[in-house]
Structure formats: structure tokens, C-alpha cells
Length: 88
Image (cartoon, rainbow, N blue to C red):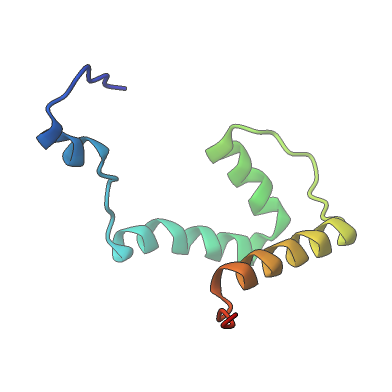
């Protein structure tokens, strides 16, 4: 990590800019991963977790209640953010 102490104001935009990747470049990396997961299922997810996250997972488990709570929370956030605002 680079540390900048008191950079000139004109450099702020460049220093704070996020790296940009083209969609095609991202797809080159992601598509083979999706294909592997589609073919191998949980086995692939466990291997990928070890490869990318350096986490050894023994089994994958999704609890129905927690996934429903997560779904409901996402819906509420979506509605708050994107639902049309009614005039007061």
C-alpha cells in the first residue's frame, strides 16, 4: 500500500480513482468458475473457497430461515432505495 502525505488537491481525483476493468476481462475469469460450479456443485465451491479465500470448508449448509430472512431484508432495502416515492 502506498501512503500519500498531504498530496496536492489536483491529485486527489487520480489518487482516489478506483481501478476499472472491462466486462469482457471479468467474464474471462468468472465464466470458467461458473462452469466448474455447475459441473461439480458443492465440491467445486469447497475447492474455490480454499483457492481464493484460503478457507478450508468441510461442508456447505444454507439454513432455510436465515436465507428467507436475508431475502426479506434485501427486498426491504431494494424497495426503500428504488421504489417510486409518493408525494406527501
